[in-house]
Length: 90
Picture 1 (cartoon, rainbow, N blue to C red):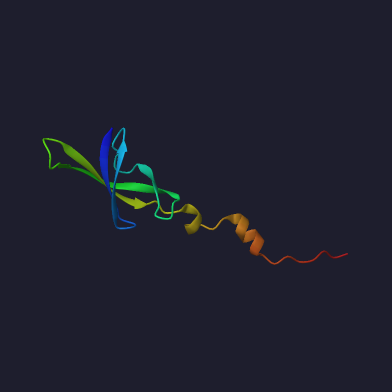
Picture 2: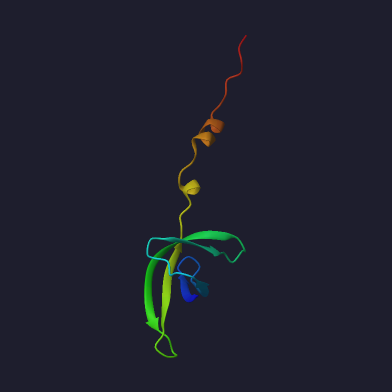
């Protein structure tokens, strides 16, 4: 297991997690939000710093929340619901 320090740009927080492999730049990871829900994050930067103890290098990740597609692009179904309907004519 590798202990990775994550610097979250969205919430300006730092946390440490243990994982089997260090994510690469451009990959996505799932992290728990402060409200308890899970969210997707994009890895912006990866670097290594020497730890205070021994000759161990600790990986650091710089992440930012992935923009939601549903927020930026309204769906066609919502457009159809917002249109005004004409009543049936007999």
